[in-house]
Image (tube, rainbow, N blue to C red; front, side):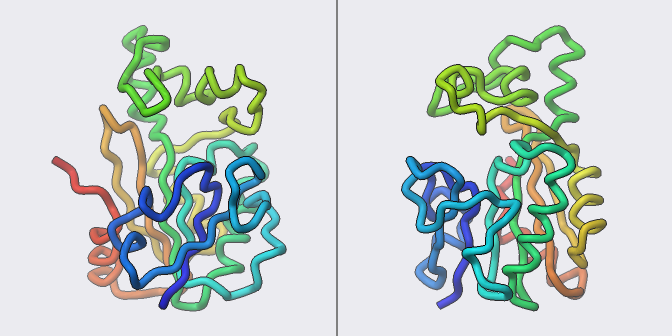
Length: 202
């Protein structure tokens, strides 16, 4: 059985990850800075000392890298690399600021773009953090940095990943997905692997 580290998991489990990770072939280890999320490991993604070097087959990061200050982003990426086995890979998703800012230009900063399980989400929430959560005192939920597809791809490669496949979905999803490998692999193989993890575009 392969193992993936679900970082910044919040209340989510493997059921909310990707079709590949949801299968019985994968074991999930949940990691979060918030003990109230009841993770297997309580830890920041910038210092995952409780996770051994080269100990997991994959890392899954959904909507948490934007909660880091820009100067802490490289620390998290290097930690993702450190805990991955040599043939391991990262699947990461975060808000797409290019798509979000298109709404801002249209003077729709506070208008809901879509309705999440937690409630309506406006461009303001995707830029700075979901306001109801931050208002509850959960300051770790504020957004301190952001990415476009081009910037996320460059960041992953610049700080150590060998290859990156990516996609963006625009509205109503406003997100970017990337799959980054620790070691080089043929373009065809990384594209096939990414398609297994990425959501289908309708």
